[in-house]
Image (cartoon, rainbow, N blue to C red; front, side, top):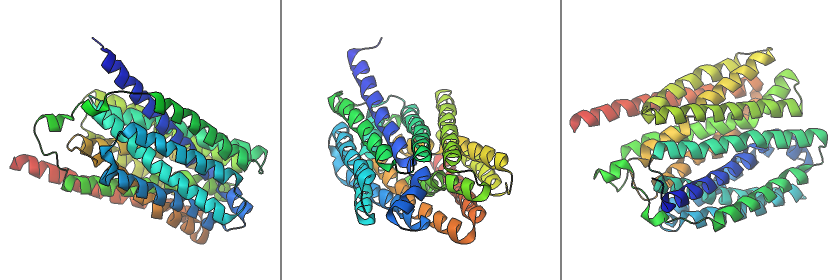
Length: 393
């Protein structure tokens, strides 16, 4: 029988999901907007890609602070504070008059992003009776937002390349509205459901070597996910003369497929599939499909289909890895995983942009497959390690 406390927790989880929906919108809007931002501020395309690095640098700084100390505070308030910073930063980027102002605005957006993402992951990790399903549902909403972001930015900028203020100003208004919802939604998070591993009396101090395996996978994964999501529109334009809106559609298709991947993984978790099994299968599929993007050559339909397949395979990776750690640890572990994972966004998307500009679109996109191969090797090593530890027990 559903109690009032259960309903309160459900409302809080939904508000957290709306917060991550906003993250999907503003973070993926950069992809179709990069060329316009480069033109507006008089910088090269690869230098404009530094805005993604700045976004992630701010994010890991803030989420690291949550993992280190602020996980002791109410995560709902931490997330709401982050949304205020995101709104100010996004609005600032929309109306920035020069490159330095744009960088500062994106840095503030990144700090807000770190607080928001770490906060909502902590809300769900502490509130959900089924952590894997809860984390998966949370990140499904990110994927919803990630579909809307490129379509909003690509469509607006294709109609009017001077509409940067509308694109990012509109995003700021959305974030403010959701921040208000999160701020007034209350639930007894302090008495949250304990993860199964903790309830069974296992180590609550930290996940040890498992965290390093999963953290490294997320470090590479965020680089691969956001690198491809940020540059696939440019790849489509340079390799196939697709144009701004078509590039935005391909980007939205990639993120839409990622959403479907999280729908699938949610059903698998509900059916009792182990998160590690889902993780390995997803990475293997992403390796094959991302290699097909680079091999598409002059066939635009093949490249678009391969990008869709890559998004589908990428969908389960983040929630599976976060769930593996969250089920076995307490405190700020989810925030720590967010920090380690987002660190990959500082380097890899920028490096991929440099490759794309200097070595060609195909070489740049091929970097995604290389990251997938590294993830697969680490995931298999973690699986072997887990079996060895299980036998030792």
